[in-house]
Structure formats: C-alpha cells, structure tokens
Amino acid sequence: MTRRLTSALVLASCLLAPAIPAADLATSLLPPPVTPLGELQQYVRVAAPKVALLHVRVIDGTGAAAKDDQTVIIENGKIAAIQPASQAIANGTTVLDLRGHSVMPGIVGMHDHMYYIARPNLDEHGHFETPLVVPQMTFSSPRLYLAAGVTTIRTAGSVEPSADLNAKATIDSGKMIGPHMDVTGPYLEGASSPFIQMHRLKGAEDARQMVEFWADRGVTSFKAYMNITRDELKAAIDAAHARGLKITGHLCAVTYDEAADLGIDNLEHGFYVNTANDPGKQPDVCPNSVGTPTLRGMDPDGPAAAALIKKLVERNVAITSTLPVFEQGVPGHAPLQPRFLDTLTIEARDAYMLARNRTVALKSDVAPILLKNDMKLERNFVAAGGLLIAGPDPTGNGGVMPGFGDQRGIELLVEAGFSPVEAIKIATYNGALYLGVADRIGSVAVGKNADLVVVKGDPSRTIADIENVEIVFKDGVGFDSARLLASVKGRYGQY
Image (cartoon, rainbow, N blue to C red; front, side):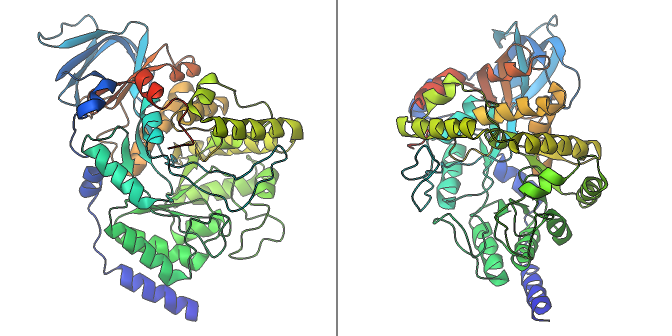
C-alpha cells in the first residue's frame, strides 16, 4: 500500500512539471551553426560558404546502396544538393576533388562518455586500491569524438554534469571544439555503488528530485544505473517523461522485462546486463553475476529470447549496442592499434596493457560465448523491428576510446552479421531517430545539416575503411581529423 501511494504521489508531482516541446529539444541539441573562434581556426580545413565535394561515393545512412561518383554541395551549413559528378557546379564554389573517398553521415554516438575510469595502483593480477576514481576528459574526449567522425553524442551518464553542460555551451558558442551534445544527467544509482563520485539514491522521491533538479539546469536525458530499484526507476521515468525527456539504463537490480513494464525508453549494453535468469536473483538487488548467466544461457533463437524481444519492440524500448567494451573480454579479439596507444598517457597505456595481457592470460571460454550470443540477439532484435543504436562505452580501457571506439563498434556490427551499410545506419540514422532529430541529421539528404564524414576508401564494401577519416564536417565547417588527433596525442587519461 505504501509503495502504491508513493508512486501515485510521485506521478502527481511530475505531472505538474512542464514538458519540453520536441522542437525545443532539437534546438538545444542542434543549435544554430557557429564558426570556431580564434586559435581554434588551426583545426579547420574547410570553411567556405559554399563547398562542393566532387567525385565522392555517397553512403547516405539509410541502409541504401552507396552511389558512386557524386557531388555533394554544402551551402551555409546545409546539404544543398546531391548530384552526379558530371553535373556543373556554380561559380564561386570551393571545390574539393575527392576521388577515391566516401562521404557518410556524421556518427551519432549514443553511449559516449566524457570521462576516464582510473583504477589506483592497478597491477598485473587485476588488483587495485579503492576507491575507483573518474577523472573528466573535457579537453581530449570532444576532440577525439569529432576527429573520428562523431558529430553528435549522448553522454549516457555523467560524473561531472556541470562540466558536461558547460562544455556543451562552450562548444555551441564556438569557443571549444567538439560534437553536438545530448547531456545525460548524473547517474541515477541505488544505495550501493563502487563509484565514490556517484550520488546514492535514498528512495523514489530522491530519484524524482534528481531528475527535476538536473532537467531545470539543461540536462536533456537521463540514465539509470545498476543498483536502482524498481520504485526509484519508475519515479525517474515518470519525472523524465513529464518533461518530454527520455531515460535509458545500464541495469542489474532491475531486469529488462521489469524496466520495459515500467516504461523505460532505452536499455544499454545490448543483452549483456539482463539479470532475469541469474541464479538467486532477488527483487531490486544486483547479483554479483551481473547478467552473465542469463546471456550465456539464452538461446538467441529460443522462445525466451523471442518473448523478451517481442516485449521490447512492442514497448518501443531501444537497445544500445556497445560491442567494443565487451570485445575486450575476448582474448586476442580486439586489435592493438598504434593510434590508440599514441593517444593515451603513459600511465593509461600501462594500465591498458596490464588489462589486455591479463585477458590473454586468463583465456576465458565464456567471453566468446557471450559476445556471440549478444551479437545474434541484436540481429534478431532488429529483424523483429527493434531500434538498435550504438556507442562504444569508453570508460578507461585503452582499447575503447572516444571516437575510435565508435568506429570499432560499426566494424563489430558487421562482424555480428549486419551489412556495412546497415551497420552505418545503426550508428548514424538510428541514433538521430531516437533523439528525435532525424529530420536534421543522421543521413545524407538535401536540406539536412551538413554533418558529414569524408573517409578515404569505401566502407560500404570494406568496413575497416571507416577508420580512414580525413575531414569531418559539422554544420558545414570541415575539421581536419589529423590535426585534431595531433592536439591530444598522449593526453587521453590526463585531461
């Protein structure tokens, strides 16, 4: 009786809060274009009012086949025309001859943090001292995202929400370089958490107040975390929805079925963190097994998986694929790339190599099964009509980094069985669709914002070519990827 009364009071109080119209949310996420100011001009490669990308292959982000030998015309920050390369270009246009290159939409990263998790005094046995600390990467992360072709991010959980909000405002004003930002509020975490920087909720009313407080300050999405209870999650969902905002979750104490019944909009990490069938699972308690038994034992083509997917699709619950972070647990699966190592600080590089070497030494036989099952479940979810979006979850493992991880996520979606153009759609158009801005970004179409990525090669055939980013257009301003990467070399993990 008390639980029902509390929920009723929470819902009633939320209904008093004004909802944010969809148009205002879109404007907040994608404000009017600005030109980078002062010394930031050194990172701009193209800034003409009218630009023609000549002789490009267009991968439009809708899942359609690529079109060869096209010209994309950018005018005043918008895509003004897409035409055969043989067609005339108006005088006064800055022309870039890009033979051998492809143009695709800017990536919309849906699990793209702005921080780095540090484990004090980590050793080769995986031991470290408490507490876990989470330093903010306010300088390096935005540049890494943009350099890799990520023009829009959802932060998917914040440990320094004021820093993220201020970073967004500074980027939007042209005083800092980075992607468009959907700033997610601080983690809505329950009474137990390994992270000392997270607030521990004290009940449903506390959850409601947190959503209200941060929505008032400009946060545009929320994320529930592992130890949140059903009552707290319901209160947060109702508060967010009353404001016209969405809420996602990296859950554990609450199962996927329960979250769908409560009205959650999105679930993070594919099917990895559903704990419904973990042995000894108790209501509102996160088991130490954190979903591994459930995923390992779930036949992707079996009746239990089909029933879960059916419910998620019927309730319009999106799933975020974060394959890069789980690939790290499969010995030898993740590539060891020099560009990763070059970007890390010495300390972060050492920690990464310790973790990577330990993974190889442990030779887990479970991690490959989990990755295979999750990949198949994600495919089945999409086949059933579900909305799959993507992000890497860069949280402090040198193999999963801002931007580079987004690219790797697309490659892993192809490994999972999606075609290259389908994988690109998941990472671009689908994210824009979830955010409610697919009319402005997410695909290459006339009238949309010129958020575009120029890559050398043809990722519609060879998905690894998606790593060959040369120019990233955000609102029609073309940034030099190599210069941005050089500006953060050896700095990720520091600031």
